[in-house]
Amino acid sequence: MKLEPLTVDHCRALHVQPWQSGQAANLRDEPFMLGLIASGPAWAAVDGGRVLAIGGVVDNGGGRAFCWSFVGAELGAEMIGCFRAAKRVIDDLNFRRIETVTHCDFDAAHRLVKLLGFKFEASLRAWFPDGSAGYMWARINA
Image (cartoon, rainbow, N blue to C red):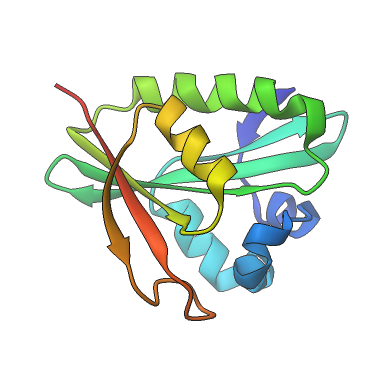
């Protein structure tokens, strides 16, 4: 598994997990994805030509950033390598505050962000396009 700079082709090739299917239309929206890619560093986790996951960081200014990701439905055993790569990237970010949001019912995502050093901060009503709630998490770097 290796990290590559994210391209629109990576976005088109990713088959997202069911928990993120509600936002999958964004991956096919080229102007949206080009804007997201341009807003900060972004990567694709690729193994043997398969796109396993994509993610990036949006610099919100003032020492704040927002991390986002889409995870492939067929990730399986490669999850460990993807997690380690994500941890290295997040550990190396030079921001005072890093935020992310998970779906309120997606327990595996909650466990993952905790392992990445994020702490729960708030419930976000009607956060996702389908009206479902999200949880805001933040990681403070001293």
